[in-house]
Figure 1 (cartoon, rainbow, N blue to C red):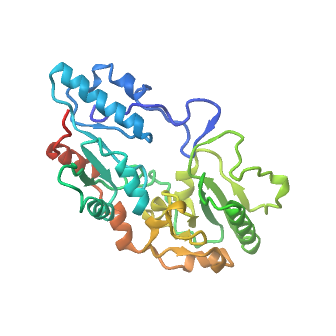
Figure 2: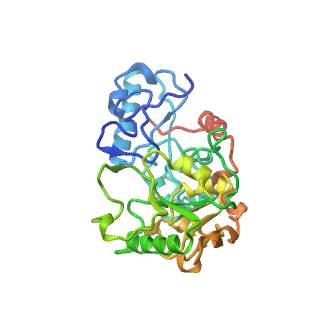
Figure 3: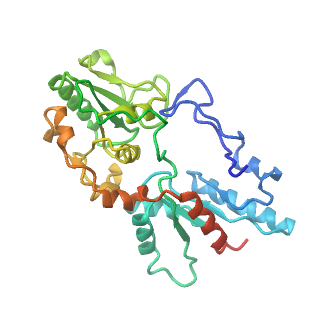
Length: 329
């Protein structure tokens, strides 16, 4: 087997919904349980994608200590952010992963920012090896046969990718919902589908305290079911978000895209990565959803720099693993 995935599935119990639907890793083990198996003997590299800096450090230090006690050379460890981050968010994420031998980032823009991060480092601080591997956490191509025409027909679908903690301004989500209601009323030929881009507990509303009976939702404004995000992006006429990484998939698949600029371009809204995208507009600029189809297309140079132009990420990773100078065990 060329690649073995280890960890919990996306939906392991009946209390959680996922935007991708249920899935399962090859092995359901915790990171430390994995260290007690022979599965890591002779591997070419180990990818460790843990959010907790403490857990990441514990895994890497324990693995290297085990190898040292057994008198064998550890495999190179690699990690990276699971989003097309940029700016402060990218640097903060990479800084938590410096215990690894190699850091993966999506595109050349992130490589440049990582190089700037280490420009004035002291000589006694090891500079991390960096490889641009593309948007490995998003599908490059839609499922065969699912990508629909450009959506200029009579029945149009606008997919709105909503996030768990963004926008974080008080009343920000309600502001978005009010705008969606207005768009739905002004554009009855469109169907607007609100789609969460994250996992959530069943029964947990997108807006805290949200009750449908408190909102007069037009019949053409719907909430999607779990597991529909890829199908909806592939078949939509336009895609809208504040800063969801899934908008990169819509852009790459040729869907007209809009990044809501109403909440600023800063770290808290995760919008810094979209500087230069050419698709950021304020919600009030759009009265009727047909106007989405007339917006300028994505800045292809920006999109390529964010990782879309890289289609051989696996080969790049393997080459980098062979060349990396590993952290001392």
